[in-house]
Image (cartoon, rainbow, N blue to C red):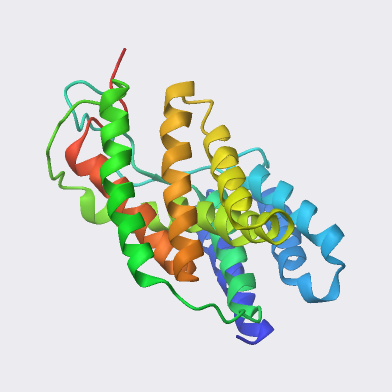
Length: 252
């Protein structure tokens, strides 16, 4: 993808957020610097571009950069009787991370990788079974089948503001670097541990479940060679959580 088309993805995100009133001029300034830095990858030494991009992406995704506020998309709703009310919101800062890194990903020269589809399918099935089972076994959630009315709004928001950013940061950016340095199994495993670690603010048990999920997403990416497969699996796991279990987590 040409650079002038790549830059449209983060620019459109920032413009839309500013138009809705949730991205201030400060946010615009920080966001533009971040987007242009990410897309300057071909002109910068990798040893400088990679750590700065990784840390900046995590800072934006963790809502540590000033000038951004979320767009409310629904009033808080109690989706499960055993869970706190859930407010559907679009986080512009995390969406920016996804769009900027997606633009970088589409502009890079992709290596040719032979896909192992049987291993990918087994990994996906095991992840879809293991992650909910572990969450149930650790008593983080209860079995709560449902199909909320807001699911059709939740799906694109979860894809754009959660899955896209997390998979591009952890699988697209971090796992690729670790695998090239440490080898496939160590790289995938360490990436999964780091993915779990960023979920520690929720709880250590939640982080343990996230680590197992991250291992599944990482293996799906490794076996298929396609980041879209990891994204689809991540979204499927999140949808299973919403549709079948206490959401977002069980109280107490």
